[in-house]
Image (cartoon, rainbow, N blue to C red):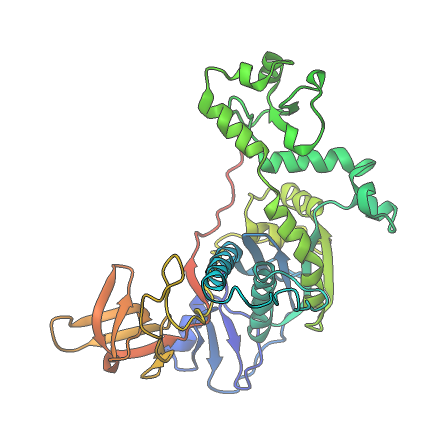
Length: 439
């Protein structure tokens, strides 16, 4: 079961406790709520505490979602789990929009000036903002968990498959796509790209074969963009036919396959570009960092009979994974990165013209948009208790986004802060249940 973090009176992390014992500490007045996300208690007295057991922070980086798990290596218990959803796509979209606005403004007003965009120099090891945000999110949560839990080591999935590097540490460049790694890497990539299903009949749970969309008999190559997966009957039925002839009566499926075949490897490129930068940032936390491959993660998960999920993959990263992992009852925290707002002075329309007044101060009456508050309205037509994210106005009349909907016109006098805006939103995931063995 997911544990509750506890810190002592000096804000030093102690052993996480069972939620039932945490409720008992609160009921007896021995502790108070120190942090809501992740939920943490602080002791009010310097009570005698048992010996602190070290935990290992395990990370399974991904381009869209990163799995995080805190594991006790001695007992195999998963103390905390989370899914960290990144906002790289939103950042890329916002930068594209900003670039279009600036180019339009230059064409309208400053065409006579000499261009200066080539004068800037990028620092060493520069990463695109969308990639930098992924690393910053992971490091931020590594540092945050370290403040509330006795973390003594880190495990990171650094590479997916690196068999060639194990045999020849000096290998680089095109040689990576040759030799022992070639077939294994391509097959694993195709399994992920096509969802482990037959491309033509959508069948799953049966042996799949590597299929050439344009057959080799018609000069089709072995590049990944010309490969897909097919079950044996579909592979034999297609033979050397052109895919447009084979699927002449299924134009929608034909279009879907051709679009999927040319899908760029953006997700793989994002993980590959950030893996070493993330490794260096984690080393800066002054903790030993263990690296593991994706193949080892999958082996650990399958040999222990665990289902597929990001946080479960994180718990299985590295050679230090305990033989038995206790996951029953663990509910992962769903963390979504939202950023800290925008630095634009005012909102603009599609072509860059202002469409609102200049923005006011970020904080109003001690609150800012995104704070989690509890509003107890004692009078008026909106009498009641509301808990949710607040949207501030300069007038002091706020809106609160609750689970039931948006409530408007709540005075700041009724609001009590529960959790300050930190750039993330939080929800609770489903509890893990052991998979039922098949008959």
